[in-house]
Amino acid sequence: MGTIESLKQQFSRTEIRLNPEYDRIYARDHNFWEGNNNDGKDRGNQPYYCPVGWRRVSLYVTDDFYGKFKGWCICYHGTKFAYGLSILLNGLKPAQIIAHGTGVYATPSVQYACHPRYAEVRLIEKQYQSKIFKSGSYIQYVLECRVHPDNIKKIGKETLNASSTVVDPNISNESIEWVIDHQNKNIVDFNDPQSSIVCTGILMRVTDKHP
Image: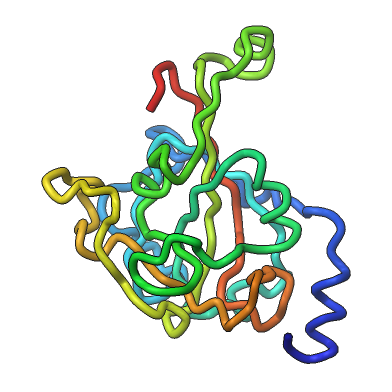
């Protein structure tokens, strides 16, 4: 379960803090790049590609983020709308379907994470389509996370039975799933100082057609 100090910090969170300074729109004329991002910021030893078409809502994690999470890589986790708030407040459960072994499953590919098997797609009700969103009929979100390379137990192939399809042109189908060490816990709590994975943002997109 961890140390007493760890438990105190885990039980202290009752709200989600945003960090709007780092909100982003990933599109041309906003935040956009081609290929692996080499802007000098620390994102671990794995490549980071532009999540084109997504809007990032940044979550506050800690003041000294790059100091505490030095060397941590960016990955994504798709989920259902009903689980989102619980995950943000409590953490991630290990996967129930364990094609590559036990642990929390994530991916370096936002295109893989947003597959409807992982990330639920919802139809926006008519009364909200123009009031809240400028355009679009469907909404979807994935969690942006950070994980230290030492906590990636296995890098495995896709499990969508899509071997003949290129899921993401930047990332091979053979290395598109990551299994994160769940430290033998029922829930990997983001608020635990010893957590193997933390959630740093929410990526959202609105589309005209069902993705």
